[in-house]
Length: 454
Ligand SMILES: Cc1cc2nc3c(=O)[nH]c(=O)nc-3n(C[C@H](O)[C@H](O)[C@H](O)COP(=O)(O)OP(=O)(O)OC[C@H]3O[C@@H](n4cnc5c(N)ncnc54)[C@H](O)[C@@H]3O)c2cc1C
Image 1 (cartoon, rainbow, N blue to C red):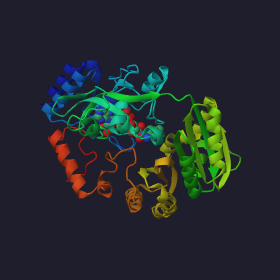
Image 2: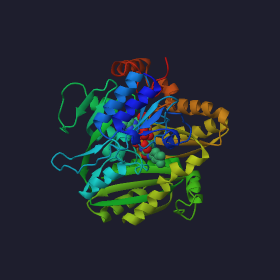
Image 3: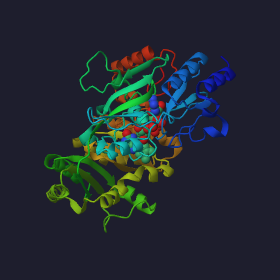
Image 4: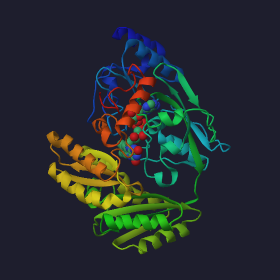
């Protein structure tokens, strides 16, 4: 099939207006970090599952690979096209249902933003467990395809624990559907869980069924200034043991806070800067009890320099600002950006050694992330371009040496596939290759992502 033949078939499938080329592909052809860019054959925007199937079959017939793309907020270069690929944008698959109280589920099209899905849940006094600072652009299809984590994993689990069903188009055009939402449904292999976190390499997800839970009546948040990472870890352990309904424990450091304040994204929360700040949030029946429980935990830990506790939505939002602005404020500085996790007991040693590793590569690390899961967003600033790969390699090896994960929540994509062996055994990787070959023998979907070349 010629390129013209493919375009004609794509136009017939989705309509002329939804096959974008030339200048119209801006915004779809570059990833969020600006590090990955390609020239796609076209950006195609199907409006239904059947149209997705037609697009997949057209690309298969032409032998042209395609990459599913949602909000394009992924941080590992997976959703941006390589030259010559078709981008399948899911953004028109954006229907959002209403929560079903009988099953505790909410259905949404893959292209609906997480924000819209959260709003739909909230309107019925429910909540969705997953939450990310990118909620306004990230889609639920992308969230499922990356098994996104975020700030609420402590109480709700990762996206994996919240996907009760999905519908997806496989590389051969077949449509798999598990949308019953039954919590007990052990009929054969669990395709929902296989496709969750598959980063666009096994299927195009078209619809998802997410778990929703009753919205807790009260929330309280504490922002705590601390001496260093060991004190932050002590606080985490105290909070976990003593605060029922603990929902999030995040951290940031003085360097990152300074950048966020300088960018005008938040006001300095305390008069004196502190090496580490921890943000903790708990949910429950009444705000006073939560405030008391948080304050008690904070008071019992050594190394606390200052603290603020808030329960109103406006005050809590101000405390969250200092944490949530980090990714966007750091982006223009083009950091070497590595999302990793280490076991909490190893965190202090890992952070201490990281400075040396970064300095050896000519840079210095700015750290923040999801403390409760030992999930550190390592942003190494000032690394000369020719040394970026060395720094990446050194940081990921340090993570592995501490028994950590080279990808906590952002995925592998194109950015980390050469380091897959630091996170999985040879047997595991071989099994992943066999899964990929079975579901997508021609390598149609997102080639060059997740698995390294043989
Ligand atoms: C400011 C900011 C904060 C962030 N915070 C977090 C965070 O706290 N936790 C976290 O986990 N991530 C975070 N991220 C990363 C990102 O938002 C998540 O990975 C998100 O899940 C991506 O959703 P998306 O719709 O933008 O996906 P995209 O970027 O479009 O795609 C990501 C991957 O999913 C695949 N994909 C997308 N849609 C589909 C589909 N329908 N079917 C099959 N494959 C698909 C793509 O091919 C690609 O591999 C953050 C990003 C930013 C910019």
